[in-house]
Length: 289
Ligand SMILES: C[S@@+](CC[C@H](N)C(=O)[O-])C[C@H]1O[C@@H](n2cnc3c(N)ncnc32)[C@H](O)[C@@H]1O
Image (cartoon, rainbow, N blue to C red; front, side, top):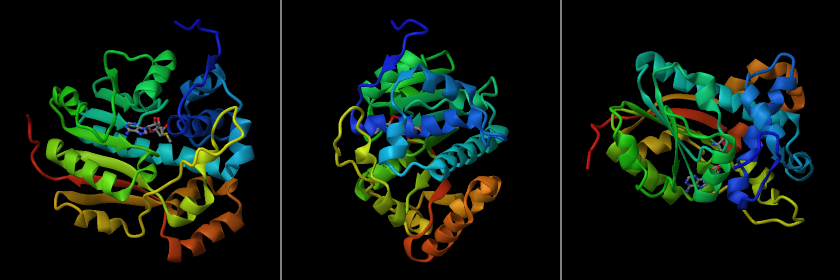
């Protein structure tokens, strides 16, 4: 048990520790005027941690532009979830690699059912800060294994699977196997995820995010996507419904993003591709075991 005002130490593997980057970005929005995203809960979590967040700016190229980008990512993904909830208010939403996501609090309509999945140490850490509730359950496991699926299939569906900021760390083959497995079980549902570009793979080194150590864990982005339609060729059941690029998103925050960065992104897309937030339909009927 952790006392309510006790600061919580961060003792996570480098991959797990990456959960602090989007949390920091969402939490920092409360200090912006106007904010892109309103998430008092994220700000509360940032305050609860015994963690030197300056590590993000010092070692990882996390300037205010990058922070804004992370906040925009969460906003657009929230909207994808809200669109689905408009169609299916009693849907089941599953966040894979949830970290310290507080999306449930941001989009809850009082009827949906929510599941969060993360690796064992990451989930133990989350539980200290964001304990499970009746309609927002926490699950332990790897998204790459199918152990978690039967628990989620107890719900009637339809299901929306949300994977924010995780897949670029995997090899392409791992992502392909995961998507096949999701199509096998969640046909009729939707899949939301972001895709990384080669430019950011080269620029951003998440391996430098190792708290209290002056080292580089070697953690790097792996999976990059040049043409989003390539994913439709992986499996007949994957159909692109909607995609937004950084360019589509930034007008919401033009006042915070320097013109030279917007121009760099505009030019770089021709040879690196674009960072994207995507919604795919998984078109088959679900297979129940
Ligand atoms: C960059 S963080 C993103 C966290 C969260 N989605 C967000 O946007 O705030 C990556 C998360 O993926 C989790 N993760 C990594 N490998 C995983 C796996 N095989 N199965 C489930 N979660 C995983 C990490 O523990 C970490 O919480």
